[in-house]
Image (cartoon, helix red, strand yellow):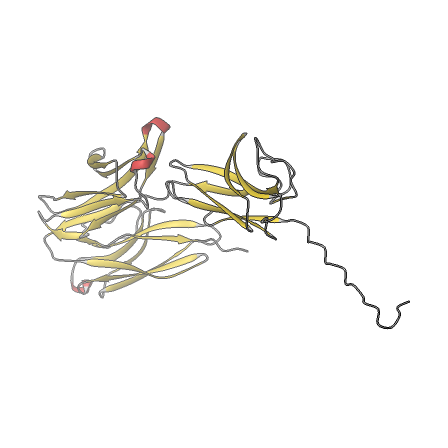
Length: 323
């Protein structure tokens, strides 16, 4: 029972139990790309005996990549110069000493034994994709064409070699580069014809070889030109639109759209200056490599005959239909 005028002291709220989360600003970086790993505690460790720490695990190996004795956030940066993966775990504990787990753990980001615990944060570095382009895609006989292979990072720290090569006569190497993100060769042909070029990223000591899609160049005397653009992509299909610089109806040629990835002709339009094609993939996920030609009319596999012009390549990822 309380008496009048008696002061009532409110009980101080209990501190919440410790917790810590962990995140990466990029879970699938390219090689040479730095990733920031962030551990966030639910309250500050300032004024307490506790530290926030982040450990990296690769197989049975580990390293401490960040330790912070104040605040609620602790960050560390990590990088790989070759394709690799690692898992990460955060702790709130007494000051980290020696191998994980650190002493006096009061919270961990994903409970369970290392490496990684029950639900590890995983980061995977990859080599990415080699892309090759030709500029211009069609030119007059003897005219120069620039062939460029590129990746989204500088190859120098990786020890890899980036090359441009022609796909005829067993694959003649046209340029070799060990630094930078692109490698370029200039080529010219003395006679009319259609030619195929590729790029390659390699590290022979690792038995690693990554090839590009094809890129094309046509040397022609007839003056035809064509381009290709992506107009629609959705689960199960993609549509492209080809444009020529004239009406093929009064010529012996057609506008042909071809997919090198699936080795099929999608359309061959014998009249007008445009042509549309839709690639249907159903439930399959497909990475298509599409190109348009002004060529002899054609509906079979492989390239059409009598190519007078080729377009830019259109690379498109088509996700499969989910039932």
